[in-house]
Length: 109
Image (tube, rainbow, N blue to C red; front, side):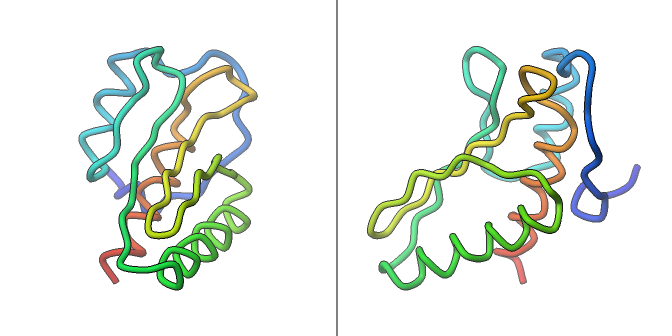
């Protein structure tokens, strides 16, 4: 299996992932959770100050632009919650997990 962070997001249509498929992909990303309704993937990130939070937000924007897959962000002084969902399928797709893995990779590097 190819590492999710090495994959590229593609245009998605059709049904959202089934719960079992989402849970299987969830095992490949660190610290992420699936919403109770199964329609989004989210993770809260903590930082030591506003500058580092905004640097992360800009990095998220860079990744999202490159993948053409854009999350919802909730930003505070020293925190950022990232929430992915694929609107074209009405829930989760592989793109959400690919994007989450790319953000995980940013924090490892």
